Amino acid sequence: MTDPLKLASEFPSADYAAWRTLAEEALKGASFEKKLVTKTLDGFALQPLYTKGDQDADTRLIHDVLSASVEPRETVTGWDIRQLHAHPDPIVTNAAILDDLENGATSILLKLDAAARKGREISSGEVGVDGIAIHCLADLECALSDVYTNLATIALDGGAAAIPAAAMLAARMSDEDGANEAAPAFNIDPIGTLASTGSLPCSTDDALRQTANISAELIDLFPMGTAISVNGAPYYNAGATDGQELACLLASGVAYLRALTDTGMAVDQAAGAMAFNVAIGTDFFAGIAKLRALRLMWTRILAASGAEDASISINAVSAEMA
Image (cartoon, rainbow, N blue to C red; front, side, top):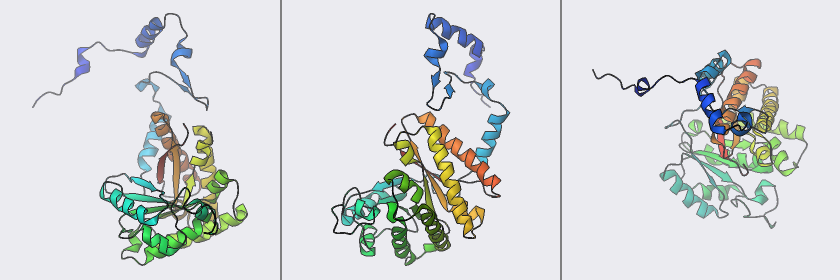
C-alpha cells in the first residue's frame, strides 16, 4: 500500500508564539492589536490566526450540538436553491419559473406586487409594482401553470396579505396529486411585516392569533411545509448588526412559538411550522458564524421549551445592505 503523503513532516513544527514574533517584526513597531485584530460592530475581537489551541470544551460542545441540529426536510442534494420571481406579468413569470426549475432551481419564491402585499384594491396604482400581479386564484394558476408543487417548493412573499395569499396557494395545491407530500413555505410573518412597513391591518395581538390559527390549519394540510417565516432581513437591511439581527430573530421566533402552542399545537410541531430567514452580507465567514449561532441558540430555546427535536429550517438570503 502506498504511504500517505505528509507534506507537513518536511517542515519544522510551528507554534503560535513563533508566528506572533514574526508578525510583530513585520509590523515594524506598529500595534499588533490595531493592525491585525478586527473589532466587529457587536464588540467581538477577530484574531488574524486561529489554531487548535483556541478550541475548548465549549467549542467542542457547540460542534456536537450543531451536528445534531440537522435540517428537518431532506432535499435531493442537501440544499434547496430558491429563486425569487417578481415580474409583474404572471404569464412571463410562469415561463421564467419553468426555465429555472429545468436548470437547477429546486424551489420558487413568488413576491406579490405592492398592491397585493398591502391588501390594496386592484384599481390602485401599485398593481404590478415591485412584484407579480397576483390578486386572485386565476392569477396564481397562471403563474404556476405546469408546475408540480409536490416536487418544487413554492414560497410566498405576501406582506400584510400573507394569510389570504397562503389560502390561495393552499387552494391551488390541494387539487394536485400528492399534495400531502408537498412542502410549501407560506411565509406568514406579521412581525417582520410590521418591522419593514411600520403598520399592520390589525393589532399585533390579533395578527399573532390569526397567524397561529391559520398556521395550524396549513400544517394539517401540508405537514411537510412551513407556515411562518421568522425574518431577520428587515432588521439587517435597516442597519442592524449580526448580533442585533439574531436577537430580533430569536425574540420573533419565541413569540410565534408561544402563539402556536396557545392553539394546542405541540412544541415540536410548532417549531417545525417555522422557517428562519437570515440576511447574509459580504463577510462570508461572519455570515456562516451567524447561521451557526442561530442554530445553537434556537436549539437551546427549544430544549428549554420541552421540544425533543432540535432541528431548524434556515433560508439564507443576500442582504440588501452590507
